[in-house]
Length: 86
Figure 1 (cartoon, one colour):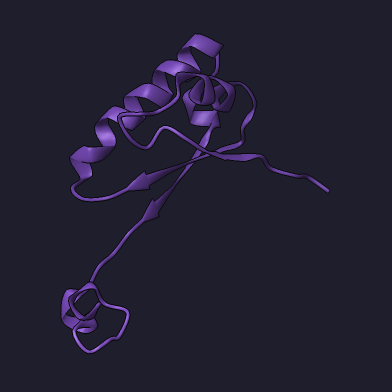
Figure 2 (figure 1 turned 90 degrees about the vertical axis):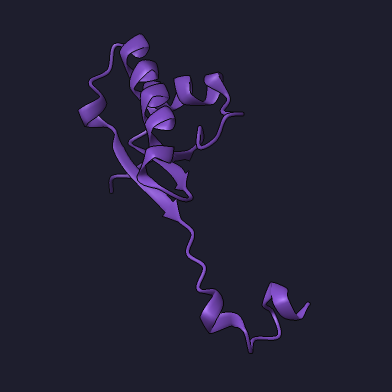
């Protein structure tokens, strides 16, 4: 049975370089957060690309996944859990 190692790191300005370095060396998948416009992925992708380069790894061998947060305020207006009703 094959076990894959997924690491979530480096999805904001406070990204820990050590975590990205370890991801580049050992992980099969890198998970990052995605909030907003596609341009917000430019810096995290540059950081993981650099970490892979420093580790001597072809970035194409590292799978990338992303947590995508969605908010539909028009669907939340009547929900007791919505920020507007708290």
